[in-house]
Length: 573
Image 1: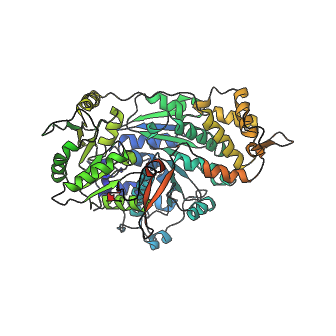
Image 2: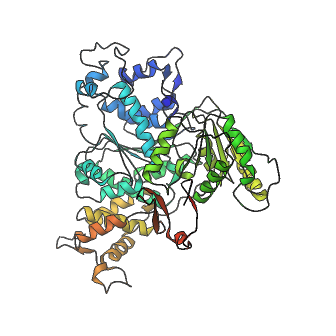
Image 3: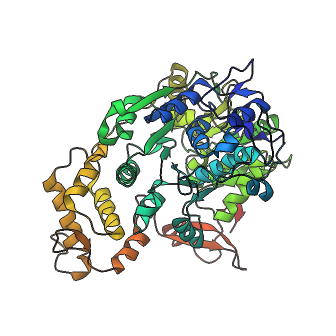
């Protein structure tokens, strides 16, 4: 049997399962075949959806948050005849399935089933994650139960890694479930056909909401949610998190117009206490430096003691450095991989696939994998250097033994003697259940200007109507008409410093008082440059045969001379 039961789809063990009237029989059969029963918080999320309420789920890592978020969607999209217990053509209902489906969805099964319910032949659910890798991982794990139940539900991802032709097709024929990021969603809303694409939208699921809600990405997402609510007034909002210090802050952020009473708080059961230790060195710990290379021999021993080990590093440089040092000391020849955001799409997908199939003994990674990417057979997490907070540490710890009933095992490796104190503080905070506090502040005007420009790319807008929509997003709830008019004037004229140049005059007002783009070329220009994360100029790293390895910062490349050698993707270049 696949290990997907430990990749985010966790449920309680079956012990005299009681009838769950809220779930379609086909889903109950799927739970029963695995000896599971739905957890309380998963059913509460289903109840909140059927009551028409928004919801915030706060549950420990391994509690099945992702399944809880998608459970109402699956229940909505199950065709009526299948929902009554008939999984295949000619099947006879009953409480259990009469046909065992293969691990992959055969076309013949989907062809035999009726289409999803009337009115659901369009985009039903939008899943938003902070990481591209998380969206891809969730898609892979979501397809497994859909295939097991033989449901005709289409699931696709849309991130910066998605090809342009697939993106264009998704706008014309969207899937039932679309997995994306805040930036990709903002770009989708910039197109003229976004009104039609999101007209059928029923649910938005914001995963790992703590990762960006109180930053600029959260500002952008809150504005996008306000726009979606305008396009689909009956839209239900859902947010998921495992490390929230004050749930009420996030309920207010999630709710339209900040009305906290519209958002139901669902809390999961307590999970097993983590097995957390600080590595005691065999030799001398340095006074300076952050690499932790003094612990390399002990890391090799830990890799040998565990099936799969995740080694988290705080920077991409440290990930490359530790990976190289591990290879130099890898006398047992363990299969070790590396994963970070500068690697090419192909390199990252290859490593993710190898991890999912259990082909690696260890993986050195950065924050590219610390949010929700779940491989159930990871039994140890190693944190190189200070974790920079208890919430981040808990998030990374949760990648180990991704189950509520099993303690997550993690080892902290301080890089120097001073980091030992910081590591001890994070260790104590986790033991006491203390989470890092989050400060919510008013929304940034540069994000607002970018959002307004994006909506202008989608079509003309009325200033008063758009102001009301923007004010329904909590970060901009205190925005007044005069300030909003100044933001629009900045886009329309370029501001006091650039108003003399026509190329910065991007908006004009029609005779009817609506704002529109002054020239269509500004739409393409905006879509090409939009985004909240500001990256440094990058240069591609390729083999001589043209195969791409990834990218490095231009400032770093400028320091190199012919004949210099550096390590990238675990390879000397």
